Length: 180
Image 1 (tube, rainbow, N blue to C red):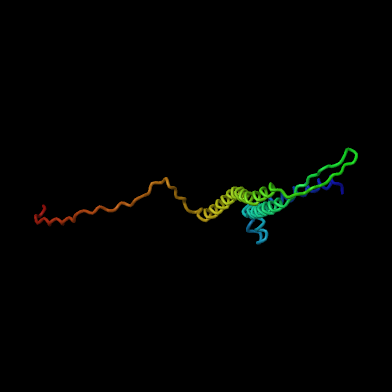
Image 2 (cartoon, rainbow, N blue to C red; image 1 turned 90 degrees about the vertical axis):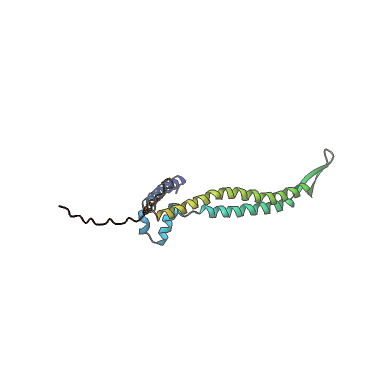
């Protein structure tokens, strides 16, 4: 199969899979139709399950390890320089290697400042992810209260008026005069 045919075939099949995914997995009404496994696919394709925080945590560990290990190896790298001796027709090159004090300072800086900078960068990125997770959690809690009217803080509170108490009234004496 030629590369052009393989590319065209992969594009067509990808479009078909995309349409099937949109029709079957994305609508919320279809979630109940699936079992537990396909329900996970529904949550995954609707971004209710976030995996980016796990990926970032792994990348953070990798970056920190690279800073520490890279700084360690920087300390012990050697500089190689060549010297040429002799005359124009009879020259010899000699290679010399040595540890450098510059490498010691650079390596220690990488080992100390590298993980600190990596941590700050990843914390700033994780702030957005934690914020999104909190918003999702708030939305889930709000879904259970959809039947009730949300209370707004701008409404004036209603107070029940207490009945007014007055002094007891004595009953009137009956009138003994006959009426005609």
